[in-house]
Amino acid sequence: MDNHEWLAERFEEQRAHLRAVAYRMLGTLSEADDAVQEAWLRLSRSDASGIKNLGGWLTTVVARVCLDTLRSRKSRREETFGVHVPDPIVAREGRIDPEQEVLLADSIGLALLVVLETLAPAERIAFVLHEMFDMPFDEIASIVGRSPVAARQLASRARRRLKGVATTPDGDLTEQRKVIEAFLAAARGGDFDALLAVLDPDVVLHADGVGGVPGATRELRGAQLVARQALTFSRLSYPSQWVLVNGAAGVVTWLPDGRPFSVLGFTVAHGKIVEIDALADPVRLGQLNLSVLKD
Image: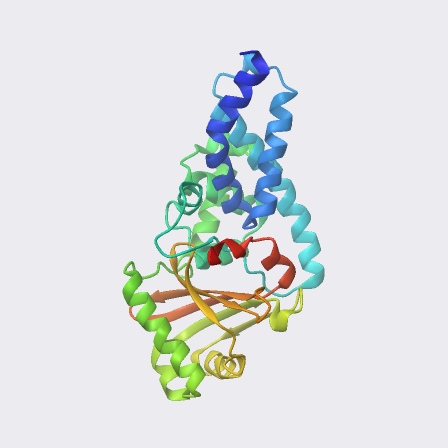
């Protein structure tokens, strides 16, 4: 085995971890894959003999690539405004593959990813590296271009912004599904009061790709507004399929021609729906390879 082959094998051992880091930082699978690929390109052009900790070196490279991506993305989104629903990890119930398990470790639900989208780029990098991967602040400092004290402050500021916002769902999938089934039945039946009964008073709906239009976004807050919107969606009686969305109960709806119409992620806490994250952007749905759910 030559040095390049040996290096490629060592990189493949790190790939799943690196993808998990990038997914938490970026919230999109395609950009996460791009960041991991960029790390390989940089590694293949480097003198690896001087790298003492390959995993740490690669994580640092991925984090720096992600920071640049977030900064570029922030300037673009400031022009478009709106909300952004991160790419969901969608799997059949009971059939999460090992790579998806790595991506979803540490309860990285869709609701948490949505809140991470509100952080400044350096805050998100510092929070993810320290809170989710236990990287010390002196190493984070070199990535974000700050002092260790300033890096600690970035992570602390992120924690304060996330406190009380990122909701951990009920752990029982069966109970989650019962609540969601009641919500869907009430929506299809046009029962406004029944919808209010399963929605938390402060429920939030994030919709990306409203009406199947790429880039059209909407955020609604409060049970009354979300219930009214649910009654509107109920007019679209497309076939639906139970799935796992970032490890929690969710639904994929299908167009008559077999293409996905939407992915609905639900956060259920204390028997109530506290957040609904809907992705209906046809371009982004096409990148998720959801056709495997029908196999």
